[in-house]
Image 1 (cartoon, rainbow, N blue to C red):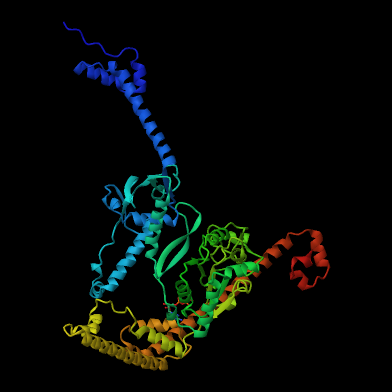
Image 2 (cartoon, rainbow, N blue to C red; image 1 turned 90 degrees about the vertical axis):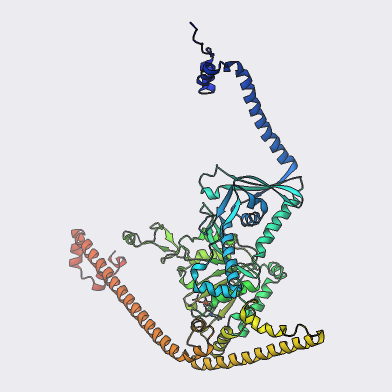
Length: 623
Ligand SMILES: Nc1ncnc2c1ncn2[C@@H]1O[C@H](COP(=O)(O)OP(=O)(O)OP(=O)(O)O)[C@@H](O)[C@H]1O
């Protein structure tokens, strides 16, 4: 009889099992089937494990030593614009395209700033491509379904990726920072760029290249920023929301003298020497403009045109936003660049309190009504205003004048009702120039008409049928000699010029005819432009139908005015009713308290003939 093989493990099995769970089971099984005694190898296994751990530690220690002593590293902040710049550059590199594990982004809905930039640019680029291909563009209009799907963006996933830049090996490291558990996963990343060598010049060159590529996309564009919270935080910051092709200053129809003086004033203000001039005299280097006039007269358009003309970024502040308070506004203003345009639109509707010193305090009685207070406002605590916004006039003035407010900025405020504004807001020093806008007069109507119908450079893309038909005459005699060709070219140019002059005269005559039908000072440029856009390529038809449009528009305006009068009347009636009810309630509660007063006072009241006015008057008389 053969003896059962004894377990290879001795008493030390419990200790080994504690260190490596399941070891005894594995070694017994191995011994049963192969007769290999694993316990004999325990020292060897321990040595191997120890060595592996030591090597791992050594590796990270040595690598850290190399990184700190022999490498240069740039940490890329994910909440800064540089992140978008680096990612946009990386996505165009071969190593990113070859990467087998990558991050893919498709929509603007993503929280990543890079995606916002990238998608927006792709959309703009696609739109521009659509405009350039004449036939394709029309095709898309006829069949919108044909629009190609949005392109996807690929960037390498978490890990270390290597690439060559200017003959140097560069490491692009993207990893998740697990310690930031309070921010969304998509924002929890860290990005670094490193290269061998103690000189970081190559990294700086790489970052400059990223920046150049990024800003090249913005040439001739006005960049628009709005206030927003930093991803995953409640810290306000400026977020680039879009870029627009800069609007030529000449396309804003405004009195030429006003336009000229405005431009001269701004040019002088932005001159490099002006800052010193201001500081020498102890005057804060700021300038404010107030654009006022009826709606649709070009106030916002002029603001954007100014930003484009001086190549400045434009920062739009929404004072009506429920998230806007003095602290947030202050943080935003302190984050403004040295020279920029800050736009406060429709300042009269921003719901600023009209007194500087007395912020409104919410009535505790009204607070009992569930709808009386906007969400997030504490009863009894001074509030900025009563109409939704959170900012008071004094808070706004503090921010505009305060130390945090960046010097060098151009502040533009627009309003439809200058009379509604507090004098403090528009006093000299805060508003240095007031620019009036008005409804379209005859000259403006003609200019708007010409602006729509005159053929401008780039109206027809080079490859379009119309452009080709204009150029075709020059191809007629390719075989003729040089002198002949020069003569022909001149003849073609002359012919083109003559045609352009004839066309210009025709449009001017049509413009005058149009201006005779449209009454001066009755409609805004926006209304006239809106009407003409219905007949974009049919100038004559626009003139034919203009009289009917005027009649229709007048009727519409009358109706609108009637509606507003009704609304006003109703508002007044409601107000009166509420006042009466309040008075009634007050009298009733007073009478109630009087019946509850002491007999002495009751006697004295009945005994003395108190004048009725005193009886009904305020508490001071009663006391
Ligand atoms: N003076 C103008 N010159 C050229 N275009 C104008 C002018 N006024 C209005 N428009 C056109 O009308 C549209 C609306 O203009 P804009 O938004 O600038 O007016 P606004 O005065 O700022 O209006 P609101 O007070 O309602 O904000 C724009 O498309 C703009 O092109």
